[in-house]
Image (cartoon, rainbow, N blue to C red; front, side, top):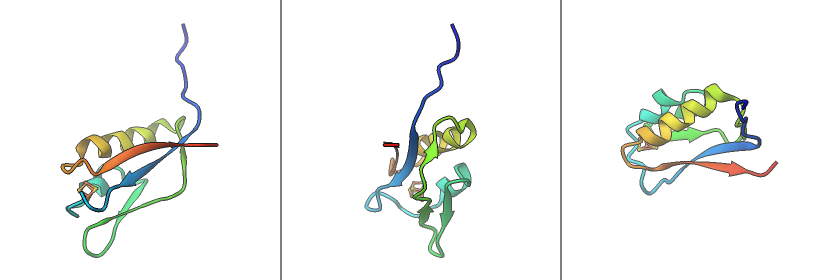
Length: 78
Ligand code: SF4
């Protein structure tokens, strides 16, 4: 059995109501997140292919590491 690769793309989304602006996500997923001057995340709206394993792993770290559970990885249609 081979390794199954996931097709499609994802984006990382933030719930601005839950986000407290401490900025851990910018450290955990620097490929996707920059911080504004107040420490709130600015997340790229450009979909990332799931087969970009390094960036997908960063997104998963950020999703799991957000202390407010404000981040979600969402599949987007091709
Ligand atoms: S880690 Fe979560 S709570 Fe902190 S800035 Fe990022 S989205 Fe907001």
